[in-house]
Amino acid sequence: MKKKILVAGGGGFIGGHLVSRLLADGHDVRSVDVKPRSEWHQVFDDAENIVADLKLRDACTRACRDVTVVYNLAADMGGMGFIENNKALCMLSVLINTHLLQAALEAGVERYFYASSACVYNADKQKSEDVIPLKEEDAYPAMPEDGYGWEKLFSERMCRHFREDFGLNTRVARFHNVYGPYGTWDGGREKAPAAIIRKVIHAVETGQPSIEIWGDGKQTRSFMYIDDCIKGILDITASDILEPINLGSAELVTINGLVDIVEDVAGVKLQRRYNLSAPKGVNGRNSDNTLIRQYLDWEPGIRLRDGMAKTYDWIHAQYVKRLAQPA
Image (cartoon, one colour):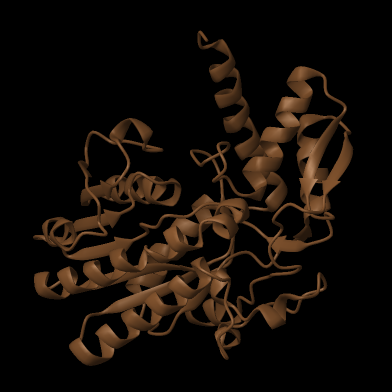
């Protein structure tokens, strides 16, 4: 059934892919982002594209007018370098979720999806590279990533209490490191997969024999390809799952292993310079997918090597395109 849907943060990486999928499914989509339209990751003529600051209450009221479903992916965030150095900016995103919840309630929205993060998880459970996959219950007792993680955890609770107190039908997913084409790949907000791909491409194109890696390369993560993420978002939103649930891959890899994959895709072998003073995040983090398998029979369908190859091709094209532009 065709619905009027709001994608908050529609100019962002995940938001742009979600808008694309919703349009392909025949929905009427309103895409809202604070960035100038020229800076959106993807723009679709078939959508209603609005530039607005959703930290403002009036902007949220206008954005939610006449919509049936709200997907809140809007946040001021980036990779670990940005998160560790911009804690206040990350926490200000709490205004977006607070005002969108109020506006969605007033507009009679049927479903409200909130994009949370694995950064909500207790840091004491992420000290070892040989990490035990994180279960949903591991967010408490609370000790999330300072700044960004606290905002996400608080916003999860806001969604819960708007559901319990006011009857707004909320759903929450905790994203684990989403990557893919049409994402940020330079400038300081990019995440590890894109940053490593860019560094390898730059080394290849300039003939440099080495690349810099943040940390010692032993830290472990799991990474989820964007197509799997979009399917998970839609499945969770349509489900009866009331509590926050993991949305991520359980395919654990070290950062050194991720570099190995990119080198294999590029057909090179580079020397590695480890910057031990750079932000590196927790030592280990992986997603326990027991609940999402149980409730939705959901598993990532794209292997890390395959997803990284697709992402490499896209970033390489962007890199070459930029080089061709006049100075």
